[in-house]
Amino acid sequence: MIRKVLVSSCLLGRNVRYDGSYKLAEHPVLDRWQSEGRIVSICPELTVGFPTPRPSAELTTGSGEDVLRGKGSVLEQTGRDVTSLYIDGAAAALELALSHGCKYAVLTDGSPSCGSSFVYDGSFQGNTISGNGVTASFLKQAGIAVFSQKQIEELDLILRENEAQERADDTFSGSPDLEVRA
Ligand code: SF4
Image 1 (cartoon, rainbow, N blue to C red):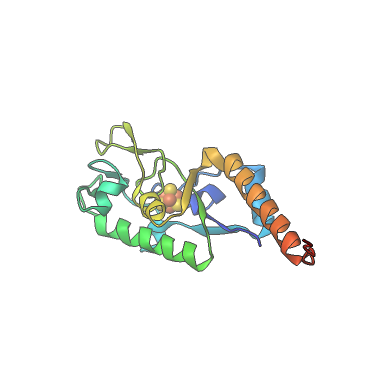
Image 2: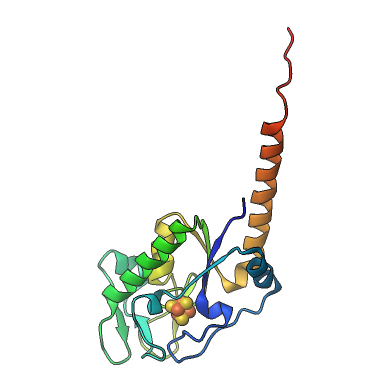
């Protein structure tokens, strides 16, 4: 059975980023996944009604985990607190992933929603810190493995190995039982 992958919409060339741009990953593996019908696409922020363009936003304290524990927040550069909307977007992403049976996601690194290895530190000065965005944290806590766009090949290898193992298991379970003699 083909394993589907949740992918950030902006990596697929959709103009959904805060500044109206996209962040096309342009990777042959993504092209192949598209043709295999493997990709489930989402922008958590647009899903909950943010427009494009919109003010940039950053996590103000720590990472997405802090936000989910009620210890951090997400603020737009204007000062507007958008924390609850970011959590709603994360929940929508998880719901979509589960409805398609996705166990893996490829999300855009650096985003306050989708970042999986770094995020911006809340100063709006271009400073980064290690950590997850809110959606990436939410998915990880639900057991979905999150990869950045730099790890597409790594995930592709995992998918191929998993599916090859599944095919081998199916072949084995479909073969007649061996007669066991004492
Ligand atoms: S929320 Fe995620 S999918 Fe949407 S623009 Fe930001 S990085 Fe891309």
